[in-house]
Image 1 (cartoon, rainbow, N blue to C red):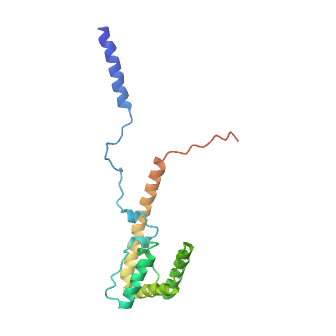
Image 2: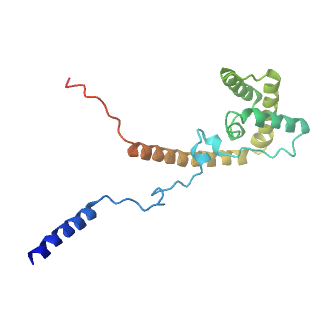
Image 3: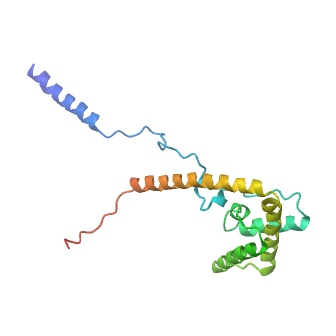
Length: 180
């Protein structure tokens, strides 16, 4: 009888200890609150990045269509083409400043954008602005408001993901420096 009680105690202790063990999520379980945004949306730095990255240029003149190809190849090599296509700039002056600023950034990385190619890109952006941003201003403004609202949601999600990563990462060990 005493031997029976002696065998029950270790079994009882083992079952109690297993109940206290930290519960791991089942394998294959994902983030408790998965993101409703795509990776491209979560990578956005500006509201303009969330808009369309291409334009239907089939109705544009042939020269502008060729300039569009230059725009896609040059500008798309550094950032999303959605950024300039959805930017609020409309005038040749504004586009000239914008492209010049990008020209300087490209040179700092070791590449060279010649003036003729820069002018062709500006010509495309000015023509496209006349058609889409000035010619259909109300539609463009409505799209801008949608992009701003979407970006506000994306920014909150980006912040949530950074906070989640920060809380889950191990804390750095710091050396003891004594009482000051």
